[in-house]
Length: 360
Image (cartoon, rainbow, N blue to C red):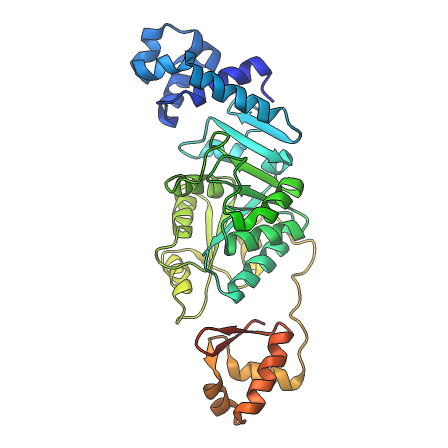
């Protein structure tokens, strides 16, 4: 890691207000390390950064922000990783705009391990959540670290699957690393902090700001060898991550779904554009080429012949009881009783409008 005096210089450069990432990169290209920038002639620095931004290097506000970051970094398992550090993720150096520094909490060794990004809808279906978690666990057991954005829905399921397997997970935040967002994931946040890695490019204390989340998506895709989209509407932010992955030269994968589901349309659109269609873990591992699963994917729960008969009549699209009565040739009371048993066994899930969907 960067020695304390050098880290102070990096923080001063990156936390001075008025300097965006592009100006910071230009300054680094012109002067070299941050210490050189801070000791350079003010007029030379102002030529690139602007006079107002150059003045911020010595402001009280910048000094306070630097002190706050150093205080955070002194806590257990807290790290600030700069572009000059060996721990900086090599894959991020390949993207057009790598962040000058990263705030990390947890197991930083995960940044050097092969990874797969898994993203999708915040308003996922029960089947989508199960797919995301089971696929993520299988990839994690195969040695891949699961990278996602800690959003509700598919992201959270992907993190849970990553933690359940052997490869763990990295959560890339759109807030400061000390800010839990969304609050519904507070327990998952703590578990990733303990057993995985939290990562952010935003300063300590940065709150939830809408435009920060699309920008952090380039890091989710940039940290991984490939990106798998599980359930996404056509306007989903997950498609931004997939587009960035393609632009970064990463493999893009998509899980197909029902032609009737709005949450499948984004994945189907990606497949039409050239994303790899995925219906098994092997589809991804074979494409990436470098990893093999250490264990098999979880087997489907066993069902009785009677229940399997009703499941066959259900298919995989949402269906109501009246339709099932026609398909199976059974009275509604019998169908309802079988559906209840299947629901209690986790084989089907009830949906709005009196419909049911098969999960296995």
